[in-house]
Length: 589
Image 1 (cartoon, rainbow, N blue to C red):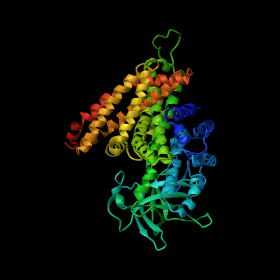
Image 2: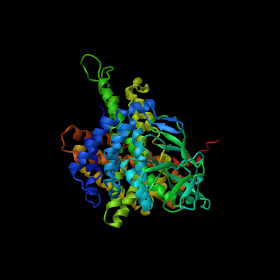
Image 3: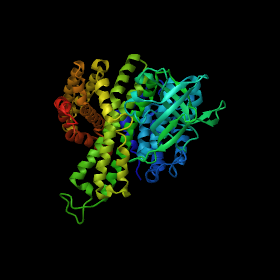
Image 4: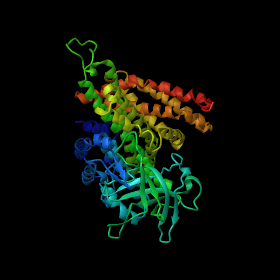
């Protein structure tokens, strides 16, 4: 039985990502260390016992569409009901609407476990939680009172409707339209595609958040408005009324996450779907970004959850599968493949990169919490910049890690990994969507370089590098225990600093194309150095801990520093030296 690594999750929250800073803030909930541990233990138990068994049947049978209705795989509806009745959907919701008001860091930790169990299961509630946040921040009091209690409890689910056939990443091309009605509502017309959990049988009602354009709206994204469009109308007494003019017209057949219904939604075939404005007219994108930014962190956690599951499965297989004779072994019979040096290297890569993803995602959640909770406005602003800086890294690096680690897992399984029997292939198929949706990883890199790097005149990135310097200095001082990690980290930070200076200079001189040509390798550079520092931080906290877990953290930090921090020089070269070749390339030639 595979089980989320609850103790490692707790260690990363407390010793690496800084949970104590969040717990000390007013508004973080009445949390003690024992309560945090109890929440994590129960989340791990539920994931292992209730969600993990759903994964294979969800992949094999998938969600099915018939006459506009989606039926989920056997056992999924019952598991969702048990999950929501356990209060998991309400973890971070506002207490005045039935939520528990707990920090984003605990949500991130629990979300890793749900994705460990099944990525296709976890993505549905992820969108609901995003809808909750958008409504909490932007909806009228009447809409909040009507919809938030049911969304926070999980009795209803939410969706996010952006993409259209002609408009993927470029929202300027959206054509869905909205018309004002005399009663203050709006009529919505158009088609949306790739709508996750757009239709399903988990809940009686589905609350769609839809971007559309009013007739007199400005062109481009400045003319988009956000509307709440329920599947069923809600009566004054809270009961469900008639069906709204929205339907599921199709469902995609995908490479992975087969149990997650990815729907084509049609609005307004019978006179217009009734919608309610969220926020202000023509300000919908700002409201939607409230939902999208946290969704990007959540997608990064999808990569983390799949990476952890693939790692556990590959390790178990490598300890059991016997082939050949490992160097130095003299006993009879074949050796477990885990004893062969190349498999050992592969397993170390899986474990170290998975921990990099965990630390990166949890540190991003920490910054989001501090940006919301700190009592000093100036400090909140600095944490907001930190969260903005880390979010594209959490999304892009962690989802890349999910794919890479799952691929290594297939390789370790050998031929058995390429057939579906072991389940190793499913992890790779599931993980592959994560670098694409919620803003492709290339878009995350562009966002990092063009928007996040210059934040506060470059002070946001400089402040982060100063913290990495301090970790490197501590690791250097603990040279005997960390065996060169501090020196390797200092060298990698120097390469990062030189690259940051070059990019800021290029942006300041209007050489944006040069800067963007190296955006993707820069994101990998920053993520690798940040990840190496977080592994070192965890190792420093584990020095003197003679348990297997403590020794493993030290070993992973030393391995990652030796094996991967040297990549910083090559990634710097891709940014500084390869930009001209990139820009000189003519794909049509």
